[in-house]
Image: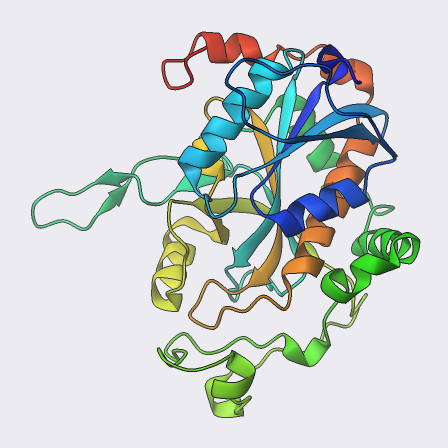
Length: 335
């Protein structure tokens, strides 16, 4: 059995396919923990990645959202008292725009713009008479060691998206049973509909109900470099307790807050479980959602997270304040 005090990196997933991807990228898998805290109902996967001891937890089935993520993080830190940094890794909905060519299978990494945090809680704000709803909550930034390493990766020409594709292919080659659900789908399945084109409320998949009519699609030129490799985007991730399925609202938030991605868990973590949010893009945050890209998007996010950890010296993480100490001081996360 493994000693919980050895683990310094906490990795949280929301969905089983994200957990599968995370475990697939472990360099070494460890035995279950020798003990967990009282009332901790999480199930853990332990291992090493990039020289760090990592504990991975997934949210309960059918319990996504900010509150569930907060509870899982709280219990993880109680059972693994030496955790110093956190990762929230999985899939999200892309927010493409004329400024950001976000496509399915790409990776979005939470990074701040100016004084704002990298995660924006878009269902938090206030309404004033005769005024539009005002969004008021950008959450805390990731740990400094993550921010500096992300900045290095974003400017390092030796690290490019082809490396992520190669890492994914290596994992699928080593574990061929993952290929059916986690390989890269055919390029023609990456379809971005115009914002005013809505999936029929009753019907089957988009492939059946929404034919690829050029008049309903956003025309996008083919990528010239690393055509089949995931691009990496750095910027604002929007988080809330609901799935974004409205392209009009998506575009409004993109315009107002320069959002690159939508998801449902990070807002429950950032202010009390300092973490970096890494999302593989599996849909376009509109009514045309499908599961076809989820497995590959989860793999792309996990591949980036591993590349990040490999650039960080374990001693750097050891110097970060234990998250448990922050939790003890938090009214939101009672010890």
